[in-house]
Image 1: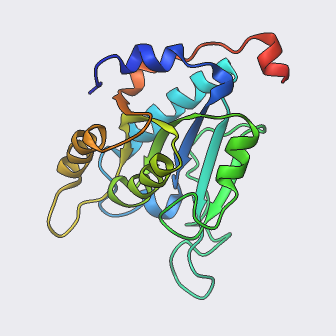
Image 2: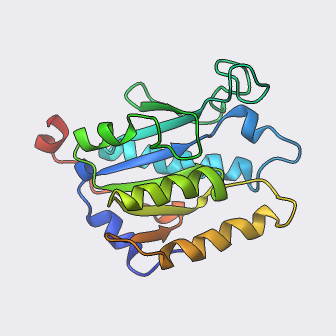
Length: 203
């Protein structure tokens, strides 16, 4: 699923103005019974997108949720809290830890993005209707341009809706939401980044 012109729009953005966010791809969230919708495929698609980003000089931000220290869910440094072993990482990736659904709330994510000159975000990860949606909506309020990788985010079935319905529903809603700079959708296979120039990469 791609919104009109999304592929060309993303490819036209300078690498120095872009960042990819990978939200909550953690073992405890993906190794559930049943697992999130298309869990393995989503991680594969995220790796495809981040691989292209790194090759183009686009920074990758890997965001990790901290559960309550006294709880039994995503306790920091526990096995379930760790990033999924199939998720590709690089030494120059940026790592952010958060405690709410919104990746901006109580973190230095915005400051770090602004310091790099980022204006447009490429969103992937878990969970569609919680952390991805909350992060997207706060990013819109901060006037970032948004590109959602439509098949590289996922969630679990809820009591009312199957994850196979939740993802396309949010994919249909987001581009219709009010936004100063736009919310665009494209599939992982269609993601193309302009390669950073030498001067931009050094800067």
